[in-house]
Length: 313
Image (cartoon, rainbow, N blue to C red; front, side, top):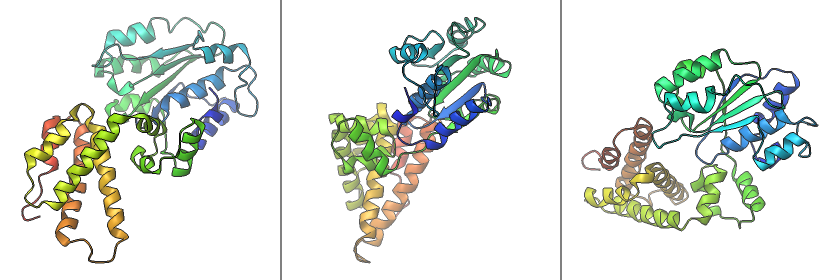
């Protein structure tokens, strides 16, 4: 995995090039980004670069033993850590998957690299166990904690790590991503991907997303055009997608944004004050709903409160 394979994220790629050249690497990094933003790809490209024996021009060579082993997924000094269950990592998981062999020196490289996925799913006791390690790690240890939500990590863990935030790709970068992956341009989906290349690839191939997008746009039509809306009918649409509520809310948010952009391009007065007010309050409630979802509020309560507007709106 080379940095050149990653579209965008120039600042983060340059960080690792400079840090390695100046031997200023930290022992632990938090890599934060939305689902499909490329967190794992960045960690892998950085790990490959740091392990490569013949890196030149700020890029791994792709030919040495370390690069070939990394490409095959068999590098002995790269350890992937994933939750063993849906509830996340417990203390025993961290002890077994991270600590058990940490004191064994790297087999062939200068670093022993741990890529910990879904780091936010660690329980508080599990985070405290890992904290003791990243406070005083072996000199050769390097940790990448990948997360969609760093706010679920303890402040003590955050303070011991360098935080790297992946940025959404621009529309031009998203088009380049589709081109590299042999997909036709889909301007209609780029907005819905919100700068996430992985999400864009998923959307272009997903019939399920097309169905959800259609349902949510129909829901939005009914909500805006029908003052006396049936809240049970509206909530039932989102309840259908409760298992993937974050994506459903994001899809609704983007559909709402596209509607508002369309209104801005129309002559003044083309939209009624009532419909504009309803757009405004739904946008406000959507922001609150996404915050509540991150805070693990009950999904049915989130969906129900989404359509509760002030009287006479």
